[in-house]
Structure formats: structure tokens, C-alpha cells
Image 1 (cartoon, protein in one colour):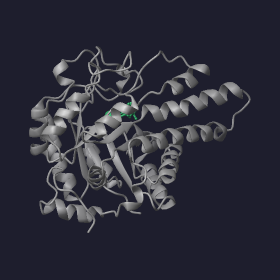
Image 2 (cartoon, protein in one colour; image 1 turned 45 degrees about the vertical axis):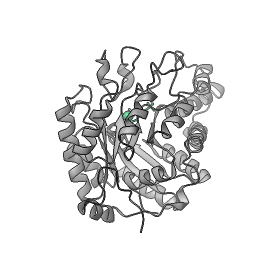
Image 3 (tube, protein in one colour; image 1 turned 180 degrees about the horizontal axis):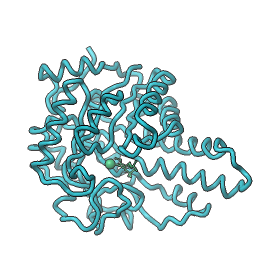
Image 4 (cartoon, helix red, strand yellow; image 1 turned 180 degrees about the vertical axis):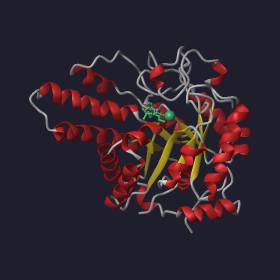
Length: 358
Ligand code: G3H
Ligand code: 13P
Ligand code: ZN
């Protein structure tokens, strides 16, 4: 199965009313865990690599790994996506290494920390969309910045502004979202609704005051054909916190985005759901458990195999909860060249005209 573009996959998801988890990868074990879960549930896959993942594994290693996974699991369409691209060079070099989709995160300046002004966000996102579409790659843009509505954003967020932010930046304005999608031509729109990256999202189980699903509903009413993306969507399950803490970890009590709230947002146009922290926690819990239960162990496989299994089980749960399961075999992949032709002919305007296989 050839690699699929984000645009075609999310068009399919919208047509059939499901969401697709986008799992971050850095290494072979995470890739295998995702693919095992996808194979078991017949789910199409989005794998995404951050700039940090690209420098950790190397572009050639990541490109060959995706090629290997596509050969090992020929029935599963895989979208390979650049997570949080910060400038044109990052996005274009990802495409050159075989990525079928890029995120141009122009909500922040190129340093990845400073909130950008609206004109900058529009200009750089439109520029990347214009270039990427010439070769058939998809583009995700972001409007407004992720951050906790409860107060200070954590430095641990990794991608995003730190410190106290103007609350107006933390919730995407539906009118501005309409203008942004029209002016940039993005295929998917990442919105801010109170989620943040990392494990420490909420100090209590979130309600509507700190997790604004209402904002998603309002944007979807204004932009019913635009695929929405929810970053910072790890659920930080209590059982994963407990495994880590039972085996020597010291994670303070924290709360993530409840799976049922994600399922609700999928009913309101969210099609791509970004998850990294849950993958990390599933694996780290097993590293800690093996290290504590078998202090004489030093074979990395004895740590990595249970870690892969735990991540696989978490991915499978998300494929099932988001309705992704059961859809892989019904997708006929459209090649990137053909997508390029459709963009050039104007047949794929800002996520309004679905990409369907002939
Ligand atoms: O967007 C954030 C992801 O969790 C990637 O994090 O830059 O540490 O790879 P990273
Ligand atoms: P989490 O930290 O909630 O897993 O979010 C990941 C993310 O949004 C990657 O872009
Ligand atoms: Zn993100």
C-alpha cells in the first residue's frame, strides 16, 4: 500500500464520521506498536515526527522505517506527517524525505515559543500550502496557541508558548478561523481549545471552563467542511500514572483529555487527534516496572518488548474509541502526483471538496 496523504485520509474520515489518532514516533518500537494495533483493528494510520524526532532518528532512518512499515503491513494506509513544522525549510525537507503531509505551525514564530501575530501566521502558512500542494502533499495550519486556561503554561509543553498568555490567544475565534482557512488554503486546521502538550494539562478532571469543546462546536458550525485537529490530546490515563508511580516514578497527580470528550469533538469535525504523551507513558511505565522487578536485567529487548505491547494496547483502544477501526481496507490510496494534479486544477479547495479515489 502506498503512503496516503492527510487530505485523502481525513476526507474519508469526514465522509464516514470517524477520527484518526496521530501518534508521534521516534523509533522502530513505536512504529511497530502503532502498526500492530492498526493491523489488529483494520485502522488507517497517521504517524507524525516532530523536529526533535527527526534530529533524534535522522531523516534517512525515519524515511526507510516508514518504507519498511508500509511493506510489512501492506493493507494499512499510512500517512507520514511533519508535526509542528516551524518554517518553510522544515516542511519542504520533510516532503523531500517522503512525508505525505506537513504541519506549518505559524501560530508561533520560528523559535517555536513566541506567539506570532495574525498576519505572520497567515502569510507563512499560505506560502507553505502553496508550495506543498504543487507536489500533492497536504498541509495542516494552526490558529492561536495551545495552553492551559487554568493559568501558567508549563515549560514542559515543548511546543508552545510558556508563561501566562492573553486568554484570547488560547481559544480560536470562529470568525478568524473562517478567514484563515480561506486565505491559506490549508487541508486541516489545528485549533486551540484549552488543551496543552505534555502530561500536566489539567489540575482536575476538565469541565467546560478549562476544556472548551464548545469552541470546537462553534468553529465546526462555521466551517462544516474543514477538518479540525486537536493537539495535546493525550488522556494521561490514571492507570498509566499508577504504573509509573508504583515503580519508582514521582508524577504528581494530573488529568488529561478524557476519551469521551475527544469522541464528542469527533462528532463536531475533529478528524486528527494528536497523541504523544500517552505513548511515552505507556512505554516508560514498562521500563520502570522491568527495571524494578528484575534489577539484574540488562537485555534492552526485555524492556522494549513489554513497552511496545503496552503502547500497542493503548493505540488499539484509541483506534476503537475514535471509530478509526474497520476503515483501512475500504480506502483506495490516491497517489501524491494525482493529488498534485487535483490541487493545480482547483478541485481541492480548502478542505471543501472531498478527495475520492476514482
Ligand atoms: O508536539 C509535541 C510532541 O509531543 C513532540 O514532542 O518535540 O519532544 O518530540 P518532541
Ligand atoms: P500530547 O502531549 O497530549 O500527547 O500532545 C501531542 C501533540 O499534540 C503533538 O503535536
Ligand atoms: Zn502538537
